[in-house]
Image 1 (cartoon, rainbow, N blue to C red):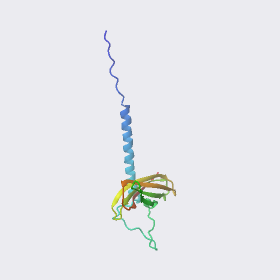
Image 2 (cartoon, rainbow, N blue to C red):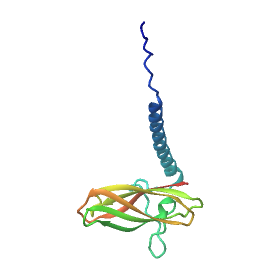
Image 3 (cartoon, helix red, strand yellow):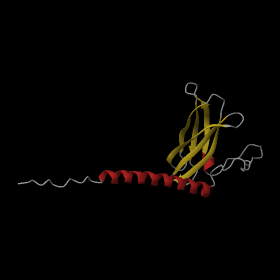
Image 4 (spheres, one colour):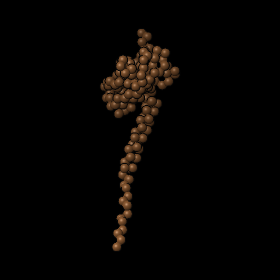
Amino acid sequence: MSHQQPPPRRKGNAGKIIGFSCLGAVLLVVALIVAITLVARDGDGGGDGDPERRTPAPRTPSGRPQEESGARGDVKITTCEVDPVTKWAAAELLVTNRSSKASDYIVHVEFVDASGTRLSETYTSTNDVAPGQQSKVTAQALGRITAKITCRIKDVTRSAS
């Protein structure tokens, strides 16, 4: 009398399905962020654009620059410094939502030396800022910097939350 072995049990594909679903979700989020950034930059007019082609900011009769318009005008640098211990540059930013809708912000900050050479750059964000509300955020670079720096806001993307 011979015993017949049952056929080998097939492994389920649940792990593959979950893995590919997670990968798809991550890729979808990245694609949406890129699309929102491009649409907001083109449609909002809030980005600084190419600094070589940027027109000078309008000035008041006293000669002081007027407030910038769009999303760029919503962000102000409050401090700009290099940490004495880590030698990492940081810019403290104050984001004030001047639009009529709750908004998310992505801010591109660069750190330059006295000659204007970029030493480092970083992005920071703040989400769901209500109209008229302010949000304090830090743009932290990770590169070691030993020179005196200036912080510049390179671009701001604002999108409705």
